[in-house]
Length: 231
Image (cartoon, rainbow, N blue to C red):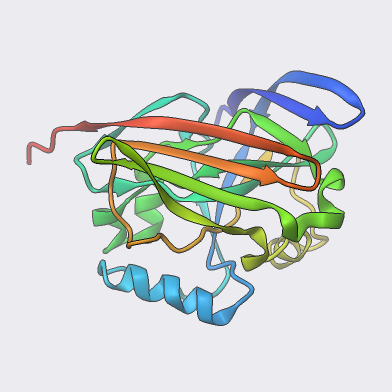
């Protein structure tokens, strides 16, 4: 299978930004990664209300085609029943572990009968900028995830919270693979936050990862074009 090549920018505090074309060989969606069992249960109940079955294990790691990854600012999705989820993402590339942010855009109707299938239904947008993990590891829990949707023509905060609500990268990778290190060319989505006001679709999804300690953000957004469902 051919890898998915993305044009990314790697930012480090003491070096100029590096533009690289990175071949992504594997994509992984980690689910139910919360540190707080009560928060995990809240999100499980949130999805159960939509008919989604409980996960077999927590955390759980879904494989998804790397071809679904995109940095584009527009995606197409079948119908109007899909929605985004802001997540921090891990990328093993250039011999280092990098931190970024993406959206696990998911078809909610398909999710009710097959989570693994639903993960394959939609593109997975990621911001084209990544930070080196070593630069944020010491203040990891200070990082903040935010997503916004547009309702009535106005931006509305859809999700917001600290990454401290989810397993940190070291712990999560130890749960995923022996040795706790991703294979080169692997990108992993690492869990999301509960949606304010419940999960719902929108025609635009904006998301960001903020590092208040080093005073920087990674921001991205995309428009969702609904394709007709004819049968």
